[in-house]
Length: 69
Image (cartoon, rainbow, N blue to C red; front, side, top):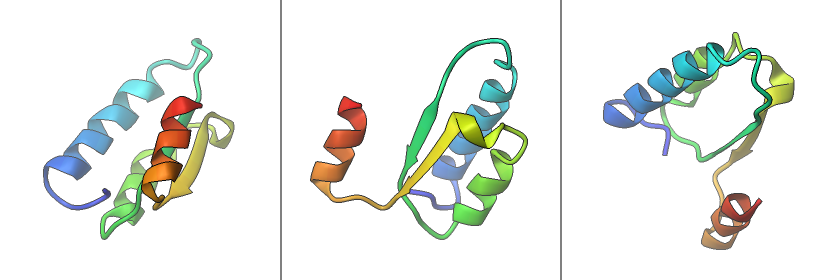
């Protein structure tokens, strides 16, 4: 869930860490939504879009499928 507080702080830390991995092949699917979505998107703005997928809010089955992928 993308909400203020500890959850948002975790996204900010993750975005900062991933920005340092420019020479490593990785892709991240972000699953979830919430009041802090704009702040989360802003945190990841410096990361090339090809490395990110925004899945939004998902059902339990959707989350399971994303984790499986």
